[in-house]
Length: 631
Picture 1 (cartoon, helix red, strand yellow):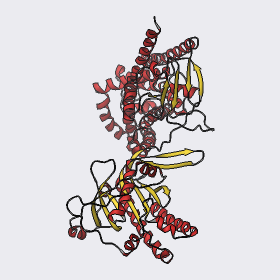
Picture 2 (tube, rainbow, N blue to C red; picture 1 turned 90 degrees about the vertical axis):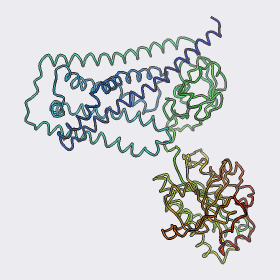
Picture 3 (tube, rainbow, N blue to C red; picture 1 turned 90 degrees about the horizontal axis):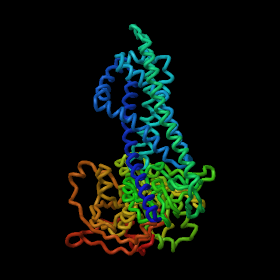
Picture 4 (cartoon, helix red, strand yellow; picture 1 turned 120 degrees about the vertical axis):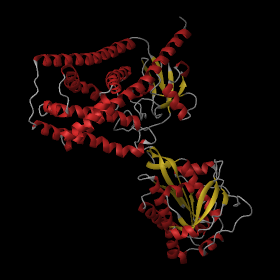
């Protein structure tokens, strides 16, 4: 056989393994969800025992209708067979058993569950089917309480912890999970606690019932012991078979050829082929990120294949889908999905700093995610002209006072300041609470900021060559939040995304439409409120085909009452084209600063330009100063 044929055969075998790993993951997850759903209904039925055994019997009739039906029985027992088998298959596919503690805990829980679960299944469902034993809650509770109460409680906790750990680490890479994480955690804690309480209350009540005791024959005892022994022998025999397979495989690969893998920045290693690149990271203690634990549900472990990519099998369905989702360029692969058979050179793309206290995997920040936020970008007007006429000590003192007032206005409404840059700042709202609440608090904070600036003008008016002016842009939408960290700058929470860029461009447009505050219609709509003294505008946003509808405020926003709404005049539409340098917007999103390009004059969308909003004395004085396009 030629070398090309050998390489092709190996690539085909690798591709086949990828295909098996891809669909087996989906089957394992689906079967696990069936088992977790059954456990949830069963434990909720236990929790009803707080109200008494009669309530448990009533709910059990509904649960039996589902799980004792033909479809429910097939789904339940099919999942009981499929899930452990494919879970063992995944463990057997590992080429290293260096893993995070939570993965090790989940595997240990999965191996311990059959020790208690087999006895429970045989003692209830199997014996009830063969000998027509009473499977009602009152009868089963009398058999379990109090002698088997401890083992049943341990079984409940093992099953629940195993399922919740798996579900949590499956969902935590999803964008919407951040919003449901707290209710999920609350349910994960309450359900087993209530189930144990209900089990104890129901068990005591069933023990006090005056009913005839169950008659257990010798034949029933023999059959129970035989079924339990057979079931445990089959399961743990299967576990032993997989352990033997892993041992034989390791002996075989260690006595055959080795490949050379070069990790850019982390040296060269020689090892036997077959392990995934992620397993290589773990084996050699190379710092890496792997949010989903190697299940191709996130892209944090992606690498750039610099050399040897031709010998790798093509991406499987799950990997290909994820790579398309993140628009990955050529030669970018998921480290958890590629098993090199020949020499390889890779570079980690999502670089993670190795923590000296916890060598190995670097855990990705659990707070990273995409969520609906409201972003506020504010900037002082004509700051260059002001700084040219002030002494350095006076100017810095004024800025300290200004930022102190701004920080109080933001934090008082539940916002977080992500960045100060020169004479401006960016704040986010909605890290906790609903989108409507975040929009309302952002607008309220903007009103307090305008009032604070007016108060500073009254306080420092005699010492300032011209009054302070501020422009504020507010926009709501999806944004990515997280933290960046390095040795020199430390840890910083940041918010990035299109929502930040739009809020920055709205702030830039305030100087041309003579408004202190520009709020997008998305934010107004999300707030569910109406405000008085507004002007409707059309703002052309760079990168968008259609203008953005916004509302301008000439002063601090105030809520409109019913009388104002009925007397409100037809809004004026003004189109303000805002052109900004891409680098300026991106720098603003990260907190480095906003540097707008020259902005053309406002033009009307239809016909001549309408009358400009009324100017306050403070605005008239400020307009006489030269405009600072870099502030």
